[in-house]
Amino acid sequence: MGNRLVATATVIGLALVGTAPGTALAQPGGLGPDEINGRPNLSGVWQAMNTANWNLEAHSAEALDEFWRLGSLASIPAGQSVVVEGSIPYRQAALAQREANQAGWPKADPETVCYLPGIPRATYMPYPFQILQTESDILFAYSYHSANRLVEMDEPIEAPVDTWMGQSNGRWEGDTLVIETHAMNGKPWLDRAGNYLTRDAIVTERLSLVSPDHIDYQATISDSNLFSSDWTIRMPLYRNIEENAQILEYKCVPFVENLLYSDLIGLE
Amino acid sequence: MLIKRFSAAASAALLIAGSATTASAHHSFAAEFDRNKPVHIEGVVVEFQWVNPHSWLIVDAEMDDGSVERWAIEGGAPSALLRRGWTRDTLPAGTRVIVDGSQAKDGKPRANASNINFPDGTSLHFGAGGIGANPDG
Image: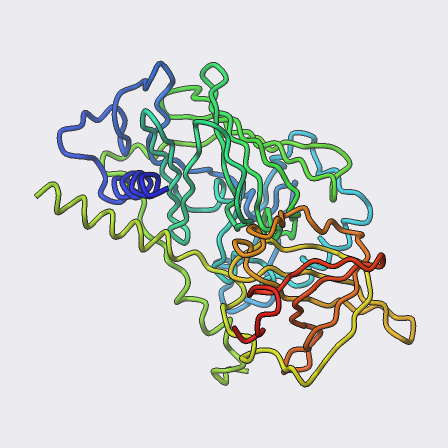
């Protein structure tokens, strides 16, 4: 356990520092060679470019009347569905909670109050994230909330406790990195439209490098409490190709104190 | 120089690792619950939250007037429960439970309980301390 912590700290530390001295840069923002142990090296700074974080399903542009002072700065951009099946196969009973979530937005959304995003939402938030692949571990470090997750590539681990980010166990299927995440605490939402998961959700991601600078990203969501069948989101991830590409911290906790404690501060 | 750089990075990483936000705070029994407000709850498990720093059992309680009220019952940390044989699947949704606990000081439908009892007379120790421990401990 101690060794594991040190290993995690080392990998995260490297993510923060950037390129280790003397290491050849195969990709901007990345570390190491094109392949590691015969597998594609996915290291680098990546980002989704879509509106999935607003709504995984197809949606029109929409004003946010509550923020009228901000005009077009605060409105919902239109987007096509990233759900392979088109729409999310909710059971009828589960739709009521989504509607309650929508009615409670923005404050009910964990993103609004800077809670950790869970998987897969961390992938398509409007911030870059970094993958660090070594011979033994694969780390995801996110700009948002400085979140991170270490993907266990040896024997799958059963999580000792439920958390926002869950436990990720990974394996290679050919050149595709497959990550199965379980034991999220049932609180993460999937987007700002109130789509959500329960504690029994299992998310299976598949990452395939389709060009030096593009990953084909898919995530299959299995949660029989909510959905009549498994469903999948799919989107490209784009490499930040600037030579100085790096993730910067977006520590949002101080930004939400007024919102979280408005009654105590006397703002309302 | 390299060692110093790594050390700083590792420290930063540990700080980040420790920054995960949880929705509920860690606290003593007396800070949130009132031992002089005993509550008796019978109902059905909605969700068992296997989370730090305290586990929570969400129960739809059947009230005397026939209505249903959703209560949150606080238990020990998963690490403490794990050592007693609990897992995240010990109390699946739909399980009938009987809980005698102490209500939150603010009067909200939250309580702390040392035991989860079942209709067949069996029970599981759910509290933070050992069996018979003072709940303030």
